[in-house]
Image: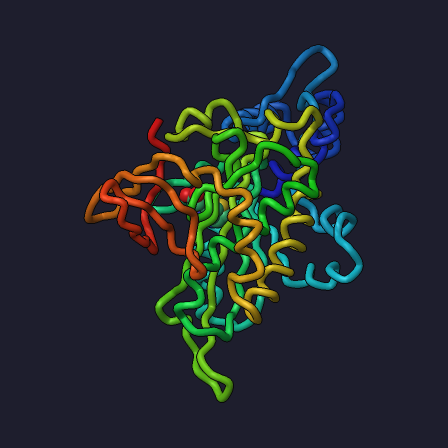
Length: 330
Ligand code: BTN
């Protein structure tokens, strides 16, 4: 997004009417440029109301803002904001941090107002319209055995539900293995964890793995973009009867994810298993699990200590899966 467009959006974000003359003066532009910028905002699915008083965005528009995020963070955490980068537009926040990991060590958090090619699990696209949802990635190094990373996505799912709970979504949240966050069985948030081949570093303490943890939360999905979502979904605007506050939820997500990573690095999945099992929406239900090789139907029996999915097959045999896509069979 160019600078002028961003400035215009900032002015209109208050939700009040601004006249043509005021906007032209403030931004030092002509009427035809102003019209062009309004058109560009519409292209971003930002609805502009126009009447004799000028232009406004109904309900206002909340841009991501480090100062507001800081306001919602506990004192022990606000120091971590120096590791936070906010971008207007990225191909994918996960890709950005994976590339950064090749150049720098350390912990970073990255947010984007929109992703041009947001990535979902199993090669899917994560629909990422401008300024409406949360697209967050966290880069973290773990000093643990590689096998221990297999349960990380479950711990992250628990961390995200904790943040949603603190935000006010206390009921009807559930988890579907390995890490789908559902509200009334519709997808509210997704997690994509990526370990890049080159991210392993050896030192005197042992191996260290850099991992990118990507979290997408549907906050206020635009109607137009929602047409491209291929699974049952919901957003926070449908759940809570108030204007969603992305910066507040981002603060809660960062705190929850950060705490979880510190614990996971020391203790692995164990401290998160009870909570995950409590939120498991498929436990005891008839499900199908699809892997690249096969589809198996059976009864979901939760997860084992390493986070693998347990399926009691039609012969009564317990099978374990480290990856795959689970769906309920009604
Ligand atoms: C899923 O399919 O459930 C995973 C979705 C993960 C989406 C997030 S948005 C932030 C980060 N960047 C990406 O490209 N993907 C993840």
